[in-house]
Structures are given as C-alpha cells and as structure tokens.
Image 1 (cartoon, helix red, strand yellow):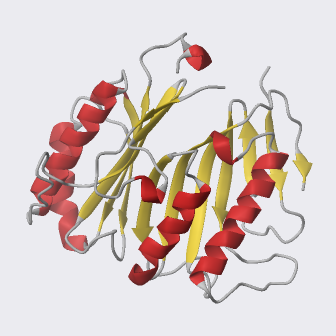
Image 2 (image 1 turned 60 degrees about the horizontal axis):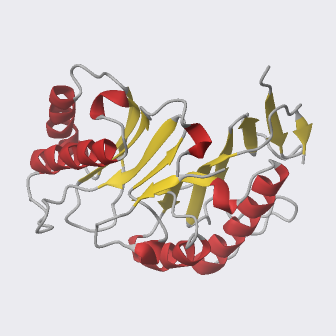
Amino acid sequence: MTRRLIATFSPFNADFGYSRAVIRHPFVYVSGTKGFEYPLLNMPEDVGQQARNIWETISAILTEADSDLTEVVKATVYVTAEAYLEPVLQVCSEVLADIRPALTIFVVKALLREDMKVEIDATAMWRVSGAGDAFI
Amino acid sequence: VQQRGSLAHGEKWWTGGCRAVVRYPFVYVSQATALDLSTNAIPIDPIEQITSIWEILKRVLAQADSSLLEIVRCNYYVTREQDTHPILRVCGEVLADVRPAMTMVVVPALSHPDALVSIDVIAMSNHRAMPSFEI
C-alpha cells in the first residue's frame, strides 16, 4: 500500500513525527491545526480569529491534498476554556454552513502552547477516487 | 462481503469497547494507556508510559494485520502540560518513517488515575475478511 503525506510547515516539525495531512484512499486525515497566521506564524490573541485562521489553513491543506473544505465529513474542535465555545462555534457555523460535517467539541485543559486557545482536526473525502493505492 | 472483526482483550476489557476493530481497509484501535491488564501495573514515568503504549500498539496492530507504518491518524491525550514535548519527541522517533496526522491535547484526567498519556490510532489493515476473535 502506498500513501501520500502533506508535509508540515508548522514550528512543530519532524521532531514529533507527524504530517500536516495523510491521504489514504478514500480519506484525507488532517492533523490538529492551530490558529497561526501564515507566513509570519503570528498567533492572534482573539480566539475567533484563531478559529478563522485554522479553517483557512485546513482549507489550504485540503486543496493541496486534492480534496476541499466541502469534503469534510468529520471535525473535532478543542478549546481551552468554556468561554471560547461561543466565539469558536460562531466561526465554525459560518465556515461550515453549507458543509455540515459531523462535529465533536471538547473543552480541554491545554493545548501544545499557552497562546493556543483552539485547535481543530478534520477528516475529509479524497476527491481522486479510483486512483486508490496506486497514488503516491 | 467485508466483515467486521473485533480484537477483544479477554475478560478484563469491561468498558463495552474492545482493543481494536478491524474493518477493511481500516483498523480502529481503542485509546490505549500503559496499564498492564495482567498485573494492573502502570509505570510512574511518562516516558516509560509512552514507550510501553507503543509496544502495546505494535502488538495490537500486528494482530490486526497492520503495523506502525500503516497508521494514518494518532490522537494523543496527556494530563500534564510539562509532558507534552518529551512525549512527542519519543513519538517522533517511533513515527519518524510513518508521519501520521496527529492531534495532541492536554486533558484533566484519563481512564486510570495514574495514566499520564494515552493514544488512539486509525491504521490501514490488510485483513479483508476477519471473523471476530480474541487476543
């Protein structure tokens, strides 16, 4: 079996042994994505802006992976405080209005860095159907 | 016809879940802690815990006709913020050639009071038709 990896461009790099996304027919698995503003890797203080950045990043990753935001079937949202639920879900409801994936939401104790208030991972369908395991 | 097979974990698996479910082309492995189900022992050191979890996962994946190399997604749950980077560095060594999609979060507690880290994974399995059996 073969598979294709989308390399990570975050500061948490190869040391941690992961990819930004993994494509295995018929799915694309996207790693937990943070709210960085590319290309300067600023982390906005506003949690809603972090969520918006995350969805933009996920969208870019999926496009690079021959998928698309509209192909998301499942997303998991982690926030570090209950107070962040409303602004984050507000952004999610705008971004996902026409997509409506299965969604799981957690309030967790912390994420990898103190300034990260929200993290989202997603699973999407891969559009290049039929290519399957032949695709590298 | 694709079958669904479960890798149960003997009588001690009391949660209603099982160690792993194989459904071609995937194997879904339950959240694993370093708890040794035969002795009820769990190492105190987080690095020992993560190392032992990877041993468990290697064994489970092998029994599911899969391997570490077939992992596509890894979810890490840790209970102490100071453990995140040391644990991820161990995972980075184990997964250097695998590079799955990964999420790590810090949670207040896990299924065992002494568990500092747990992992669940999704991997590809070659097992096309697997009847239920226990490991």
